[in-house]
Amino acid sequence: MAQCVRRLVLAATLAAAVALLLCTSSAPVARAAGTGDFTAAQRTNTLAVLQAFGRAIPELGEKWAGNDFCSWEFIVCNVIGVNVRGISPTYAGTLPEMPVNVDYRHVVIKQLDFSEMGPGLSGTLPDSWSKLEGLTSLKLSGNKVSGALPASWHSMTSLESLSIEKCESISGALPPQWSSMTSLSVLNLRGTGISGALPPQWRWMRKLTDVLLADTLLSGTLPPEWGSMSSLAYLHLYLTQVSGTLPPEWSGMSEAAYFWLNNCDLSGSLPPEWSSMPKLRGMSLSGNHFCGCVPDSWADRGGLVVDIEDKHKGSDCTTDRVCPTAPETECEVDGCEVCEGDSAARCARCREDYFLTDERTCLMHNDGGVAAVSSGVAAAAVVCVAVLFSVGLAA
Image 1 (cartoon, rainbow, N blue to C red):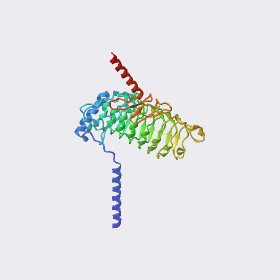
Image 2 (cartoon, helix red, strand yellow):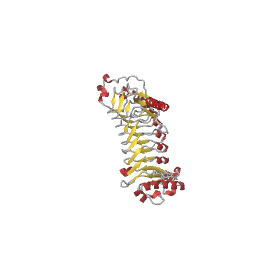
Image 3 (spheres, rainbow, N blue to C red):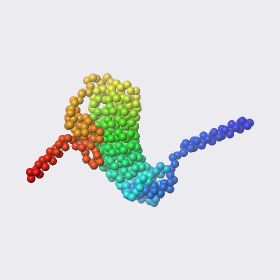
Image 4 (tube, rainbow, N blue to C red):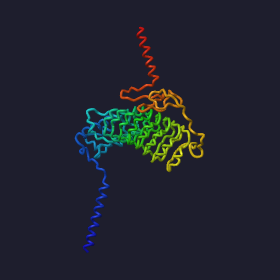
């Protein structure tokens, strides 16, 4: 009888322990009960920034009254910080400048999502948002925002996700300075008016997993330097003007899974080295100007799906499609690594720290905004100065 009682007690104890474990493991993430869960400095400085958004979006300002911002509509507070999302598409306003006299070290806004406002939200991307160094997620997809991508945003080093998708009035180049946004994992600029080349400097963005740059005006070549982006898994570059060849150096992308490079201006042969990407499962390469056949090393990879014209694969691909050898040229473009075909005056790929222009020259970014010029332009400038100097002497 005593043994039976001990077994019942043991079973009851075990059941209670299991129940406690289940309750603990399923407990939700702690949610802040109100602004009282933040320090006085966090409350004061966060409130000042939120009020700036309220002034820029009048309907929002009418609802955001008082100091208890955790009780406001469209705001969710938790122990990590403050998230703004779900603002009504009937609201209208602009992107505000960040207020002065705010200690941004104590601003606890973590997520800003204005995508549901759609075209009701307008304005240019403010440089002053670079002060939001604690922001982890920013979503402006489908809004009517315009202008260039601010280089100053490079200081937003906590940003993990940035989406400005389907904002056609966003223009200009991809800032090389963004290479210091080393926490960024998702970048979505699809369907915008951005142009220029892919910055080689972005190779330092080692946490990038998803890069969506499709349906834009991007041009230039695929930077070999991106081969060191070891976390990149999904790359969308379809419907762009990207040209040149597929860099063999990209074989170093150990997490690469899918590349969408269709309907671009790519050419050359398909690099056998890409078969060494251990997690590569798919590539969309149709609508380009490739030559040669799909490498045997690609065909032998189980589970790898390659979308490309039939003339490049299987029995339809013959030795007649061998890539022609490009003539060697002595390139005369300053900052150029590879010139186009037999043209010494047109660059196909620039050296590190330079970017390729639409005129196929190479320019250098620097803090003063001054770019390196080609030797021809420099020579012309020297001649011009010499002529002016001689005229001055004659006078």
